[in-house]
Each structure stands twice: as C-alpha cells, then as structure tokens.
Image (cartoon, helix red, strand yellow):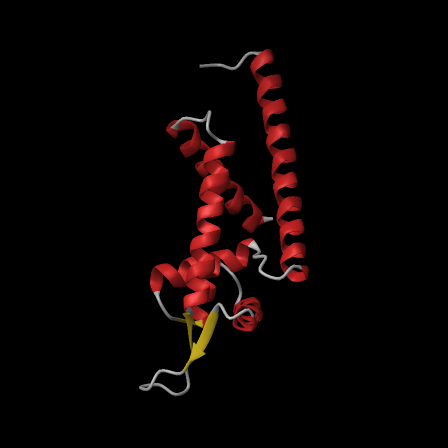
Length: 153
C-alpha cells in the first residue's frame, strides 16, 4: 500500500511526537536519578532494576549484575556501593571462591523492591487504564526499539 502525502505528514508528525516524548522520558529519568541522590529511600530506575534482578536471580557477581542490568562494571560497582549503604544489598564472598564477590539482596532490599514494584504497577495501571493489551504491547516494542536506537547513537 502506498502512502499518500497526508499519510507522510501524519507519520512525520507522529515520529516527531515520539522523538519529543523520548526526550521527555529521558529528562524524567534524569530528574528521578537526581532525587535518588538527594532523597533518602528514593530509587533511580537503575537501582530499582538492580533490586529486581537480584530478587529474580538471587545473588550475582558484580559482572553478572552489570550484564543483567545492562550497565557497565564500573557503574555497577558504584551502584552496589549505594545499595550497600542503603542496606538493600550485601557483598558476600563464596566459600568456594574467595576472589569473587556476590551481591545479595537483604530483607530490607527485598521489601523495598516489592514496594517499588507495587508503586510502579499501580501507577502504570492507573495512567494507562484506557490502553488495551495490544496498545501496551506496541508501547513495549517501541520502548525496546528506542533502547536499541539509543545504544547505536
């Protein structure tokens, strides 16, 4: 099917709106990261992602946690330092390998993860109440593709 001139303008406008929304999402993430550094108990998306991964996978090495959170090793070390200071994770040395360090979720970290997951689930359900499953699936796919684009930029 061939797009007419009206379709091209509409698509171009839609892509521009998506670009603006992506910038807005990025700015909101930066504000959230700022709050996480200034406000006790606040979690950045990276912090929350690390807690989720540890809740799902159990204790992980810093390297594996970096892979699973899609973060660099150095950034993950800094992230873990903050999570240790907050009491959300511990560093443990496995008995069989004293050279490695495993990052493990504490009971407080698991509780914070569950609280944050619940907050996010409620916020999404409320904000997107008018969107059906197909629209939500499309949104998820668009976000995944945006992540791929960002990785290429």
